[in-house]
Length: 301
Image (cartoon, rainbow, N blue to C red; front, side, top):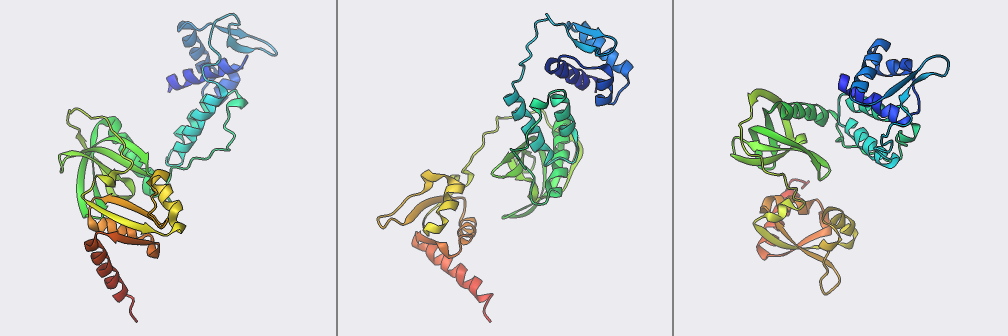
């Protein structure tokens, strides 16, 4: 697009003292005549471009023209480019790579060093990348999407008005208005199948601000105390933070959970194997013991 080219050319002229028309034409894969028209456009926008012919010539911004050549510092540019590179990890296109080239063109100091690698993809990149593109296009076009959703509560068919693509809790989600529940909901992309835009426009409604909730499950209905072996302390810190760790009088890790429901709470505790023990209430200990017996029966020889 012309606007992309103009921004790129201006960025190069800010960062370099001089550049040739031929170099710009090759970089943006256009004719030199097109580059000259772009330069005229920049001139009409009030940016004085100086052209020097002959050996060692080229185009540059007039030396005495007051322009902030530190629009972005090298450190700031690195942060921008690292962010763009991270988006390529979940994109099926090379749009972000091309944008990186345009922003960093003409200044080797702004090329990312590669010492920061941000991979936003899942183990199966194809499970997320295509969905992100579909949802992103639906958001831009204000169109509804439909999909099958597979959750601990079972399978369901959903139609939502998507508002935001969100990366948090180490996963990708879409947040929007669910036409079935008549409320705003968040859905995990890896649990979605048969995703498509249905070509139906979203309703005109007020969109509330999205507020991330790190401990979403703590708004639940049950409370239980659990004792953990010290060998899994790292995991509790990783998932809930150091302030979550509490000790009993015997210096054993013993913390209190609030959770949405008993079945999902039991599934979480099972992930710790024998490094976790439900202490109270007694009812949950008995129910969990019964669950373990049923599991054990399946492995009887």
